[in-house]
Length: 347
Image 1 (cartoon, one colour):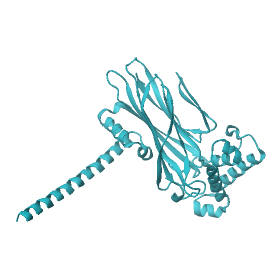
Image 2 (image 1 turned 120 degrees about the vertical axis):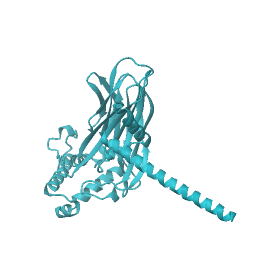
Image 3 (image 1 turned 30 degrees about the vertical axis):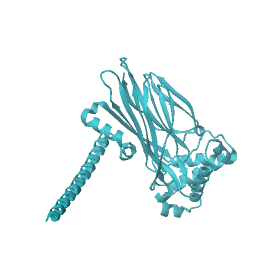
């Protein structure tokens, strides 16, 4: 009898434990859904939300629920024209690309991708890649322009390309979304802000090089908890659209390289892609750059904190300029940048 009673009690305890676990799991799912919903309502996208660290995601959502006036969120979408990037790539010699910092693997991978499309017939591009006559015409023209510049050794500064091919808004574009979230954690004695810039690509951009996110501010704020991470996804297994790859499954996450300019800015750098082999590249899909800004006391002023994404960056002179008109980053070489995202700091 005792054994049956004990057995019955154990069975009941197991059932209760399983029920509690099920309820807790359901509560967590509901909580996550509620957190995501409020962040999207206030300006995040699914992509930039996915890139946020969980701790920052929850703290931003909690502050929105309790004191929404202490949170500033801004989001921008940047378009990158793939045809322009293809034209630029083809305009450079192999030695020039190496001198800019590209590896031979990266060069070979890009060249193989372009060559694959060049060799496709117009009919294949229509049927297999969903391209229309205009897409195909613009692609052929971009290839022709790039090769002509390369063969004739014309000036390589893209700012003076007179006839560069642009297909804004077409299937040949990739879009990057960047969101800046700023949370005011200040006390009555001293100012403190948490700033997180998260980004997400909708499709793999053509150009595989170095990208960066920069955060800059005025007012001489100090920094703490500086971190940045980028998530890479396989490109090949996601499919191919004729002039760019689509993201496949998750591959790896890596810490960003961090360069700090004391009391004024931080640059977070990372590779656009890395290759375990030429057939299976991993591409930067999303990531975040974060820091905490603080001072030991108030001085009675306002300033700005801003973030910006630079795609296909060839150089950096470490410069961040602060003035009454705003904040500027001094990138070197040629690049495509997002609009700067701003929020105000009181100190």
